[in-house]
Image 1 (cartoon, rainbow, N blue to C red):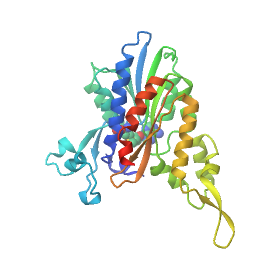
Image 2 (cartoon, rainbow, N blue to C red; image 1 turned 90 degrees about the vertical axis):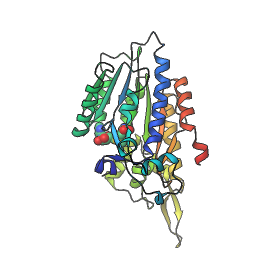
Image 3 (cartoon, protein in one colour; image 1 turned 180 degrees about the vertical axis):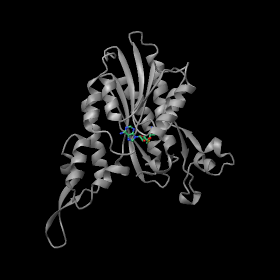
Image 4 (cartoon, rainbow, N blue to C red; image 1 turned 90 degrees about the horizontal axis):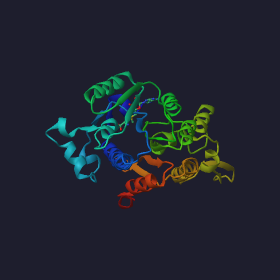
Length: 303
Ligand SMILES: C[S@@+](CC[C@H](N)C(=O)[O-])C[C@H]1O[C@@H](n2cnc3c(N)ncnc32)[C@H](O)[C@@H]1O
């Protein structure tokens, strides 16, 4: 169980992801509102959460390199103002030029109810549909909805699970429309590496999960190498740069499927541990250029 599931709180690094999302959505809608041919452009948040997230309080001693914003949020006298961060639904709703329609999907009943109250709050100014249930099923219903013609409609899909809930088959279905720009997280540090022990001793259930997640069994050859141990025996061991290999491979495959997949943004926690990579994949070159600019800004300084 992730800490978000346990207490519904997020780490301060969630702001970085949400900032990238908000900036992309603002640019996207500015462009789309001028496209007369377009019959509708939608925002689809497949793992929407509750809408507003409490920021987990951290001790400054945990990381002396915290950004000023993070420190101020930890020592504020006004927790209501500084300890909450608007989650992805609010980020999308609060942009200046709204989407034609917003879809918020959430499996957890309590969080889905929170989303329904946001729907009421925004009634009259934003067209919102809340879907309680599984993201993958809901994505398919949306993509293959007979009322949506992808020649004249467009969408931004946000895939923000905390684990490996999005199999490659869903990614393929999204790309097949040629009308959906996708922002997704690849939980390399949070979930994937945990299934990949150094020894290469992977059980059947783990192997099946990885195969389904990547839509291929090639990850094993990519990440594990033959190596000689102290006694001269040949064994299998995980490559030292397995994380980078995985990210490069995943990106190459996204690019092949969608057309464009710029270099992703690495999101770390306040201790500098890798959490996940934020990717953009889409069929449109302009969209990809904007995403590349946003995702790469500030990254060079952190490396
Ligand atoms: C990382 S949180 C989302 C945070 C949100 N995107 C934000 O930025 O504010 C992931 C959410 O996905 C939900 N979830 C997990 N598995 C799901 C599934 N299969 N279908 C739909 N929602 C799911 C969880 O209940 C959780 O609220």
